[in-house]
Length: 144
Image (cartoon, rainbow, N blue to C red):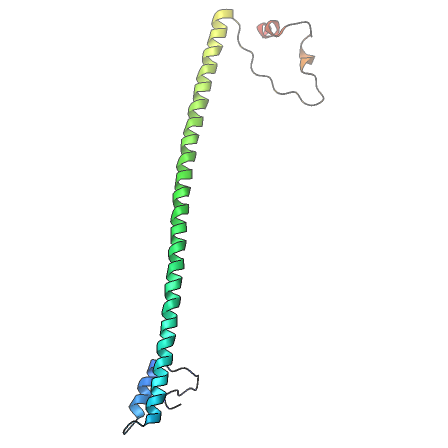
């Protein structure tokens, strides 16, 4: 109580210094015992806080390691997707070039143009309704 002015049950460094300034004369055993108790409690509290800081630092290190790992995996995934995207572009371009070559071969050999691809039929329509069933597809495509 000599040092704890606000009776909070804790003593701040400021309260310790102010309390020591007001003490005059020789210290009595009671005063020394009280001061020793305050120092021990403060020391124990600082130790507990230090342990908590170490534990939190360890956990923060684990979280940083996990985040680094996730960043690495994410970077790899993005790079992999870019490679796949380029491969799909190349495959598409090759398919387009093949189609052009096949169309040229068909025209060169037969003199017939290749019919454009037909749309998928609707549910209630007949795909053969626009040509007689007896005609073959080759005969039908040569008319157009």
